[in-house]
Amino acid sequence: MISLLAQNIVGVTDTAFLGRVGEVELGAAALGGLFYIIIFMVCYGFTTGVQILVARRHGEKNYSQIGKIFDNSLYFLAFISLLVTGLIYLCSSFILKPIISSPEVFKAATTFLSYRIFGLFFASMGLLFRSFYTGITDTRYLSISAGIMAGLNIILAYAMIFGKFGLPPMGIAGAAIASCISEFCAAIFLFLVTIGNKRVKVYQLFRWVKPEWEIIKSTLGVSVFVMIQFVLSLSVWFVFFLIIEKMGERPLAISNIARSIYMFLMIPGWALCSVTNTLVSNVLGEGKPEQVLPITFKIMKFSVALLLVVVVIAAFIPVQVLGVFTNDQSLIQAAIPTYYIILSALFLFSLMSVLFNAVLGTANTRITLIIEVVTLSFYVMYCWFIAIILKKPVQIVWTSEWVYAFFLGTFSYFYLKKGKWRDRKV
Image 1 (spheres, rainbow, N blue to C red):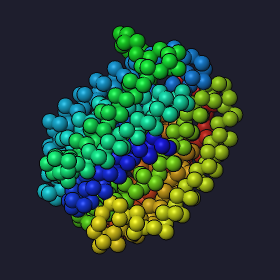
Image 2: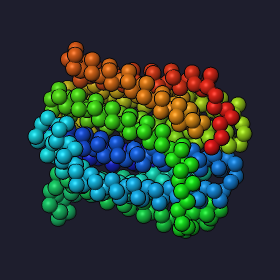
Image 3: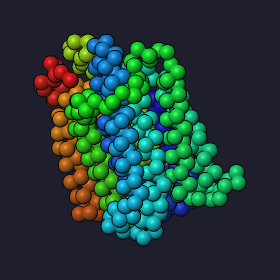
Image 4: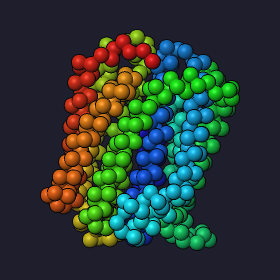
């Protein structure tokens, strides 16, 4: 949770600072940032597969295989992230031009993305370390690295966006550059502490041997469906924001604030999701499938208690929370109805995502992809109908998060109860 808290501070910082620059920059950061996250999710999906395999081998006590999985994953991620960085830097304006209506938003979003993409390599390396440490259930260094990233980003973003400490004011470009530098420093920290940590020697990391395609292929066998799933999920959310953009700059600015709050308050839920798929994979590696459902339900109970506290407190201070992201009082008042919608969605989604991550922990990623595709189909049809056909206000469009959570949890629960996952080998 501490690790995820610090990582999300990066996004919150950008939104909070850019909210004081202007609504165009706020909306552009939402679109440019979401496009970056879609690409980032390719790496995230791959490292989720790595985490499942590391946890499974850890449960089997097959420690030397963990090092081989890690090193070959490093080769793969380095190649993919550098290739994509070059392509997006050269083609970002051609990609965004046809899908963004406002010329001002298009220009700002292109500027943001052309700088932000340079953080992809370092972000992917950070994800790989995270998958390793989470898989072996030792997450202390993740908290420290994320704290470094968050702290640096706050200082650098403030200096670069507004032109402080002798730097020129760079606006939205400064937000992107600050995030890249912060990710670089966090990745360097994780590399240095890992090569100097005697406790992880048993896993035989950084052997720098010739890449083994069979290991990369087997890792992709678990990861590829997660990669597709995450990209689809974020792509649909990107479509959601494009639909909002057609409603005007004010609804887009409100939605960017709502997104930042939603992601930030969901931190306990995301952390418990990561715990869920790691523990499920561990107990399956130990040959104890009967423990999967009890573990899942126990985590769900903990999630209810934790998120209830978060939601209740947040419900009483809407103006204060929204005021973190903008000093425009009319924008704050306009965002309050959407704020309460995301609080209710937050509580429901935190429960349903635990069930979904239990399915993910079984390593049957083909099933998780099917669940995601069917759920997203209902989600996008609902969004389109509410926003475009019925032309409802932005807060009603955000009720689509209820639809997403309901179908995601329902399908996951039925698979855990009735599906054939107990004897699956990876």
